[in-house]
Image (cartoon, rainbow, N blue to C red; front, side):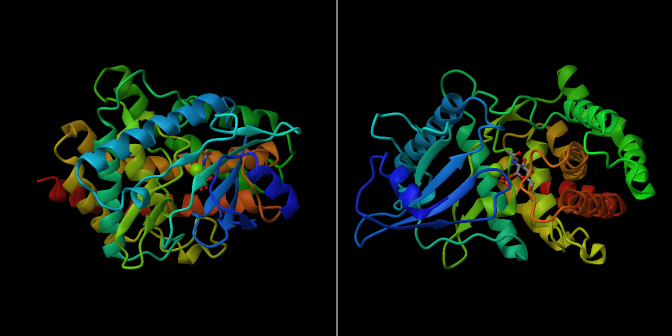
Length: 368
Ligand code: GN1
Ligand code: MG
């Protein structure tokens, strides 16, 4: 989209200052983000085009984010935190008072305040950063434990529900919309590998139905790049709140490990680079349990290591299903990108399977 069009969109919002530029920002797979730089003195902003194909109910989505950020802001303020505006996101309303703007083409836009002097990491974090990130996501869950009012809306129904992800996957295999299933034996092999593990991977849903495993407000997208650090590598803020909703804590724990504790990239073309980084695993576990130990049930702690496997398996299944569907969900940067992501995530899963005993030991040790 042309910069002038983007500037016009920004003009629909109630923001301070004069806009100097609007440029693409970040590497999200779902929404399109832009940094809005204003002339000196006024804050900068992040403009986002919400992926309406994925987030069907934008009113509920924005309302969730408003409730979550208001609640966290009130807690930080009450605790006497000084730089509150850097520690929690803030939405800028549109001129008509809504929390988004719908343009003439039916696109939904929103604006958030940009957090200055912050940085994120897509990969290559250190154990020290992982320790801080663990504390940050532990705090995040703790702060939202007493969110008043109705439960948050599930912005994507059954988002981290493994049973329903498998239903979708099996349908994708059956439909084979893009005609990719028979392309190579490797693809058929991967279907078998998914099925072999399916029963084990649905255990969280079973435990929930049996009343053993509770849901709590989770972030549901605890990718390593969704934590912002300051220049001294202290955690500032947890971002990307589109999927904050009730879920299992093992999901949030697992999704961080899937992204932060991978020695390679999420879509690494060189499978030899991919493995679980046990130093990162240990550091994040320590940080997270420091904050979460007090409210977790034993069954939740006991399944954290399983959560790392589960989220890596779930992501393998999601990328694979999207590949078979013909790339409808995730933005891709090359024709076989979703397949590359599938095999890369599967490699990480195998590495976790090999190290599972040690992962469980680390969790048990940190929970003492
Ligand atoms: C998507 O947009 P991004 O990169 O924050 C996805 C996550 C996946 C992730 C895979 C709404 O997150 O669930 O784990 O890609 N978000 C949605 O990297 O589907
Ligand atoms: Mg996201």
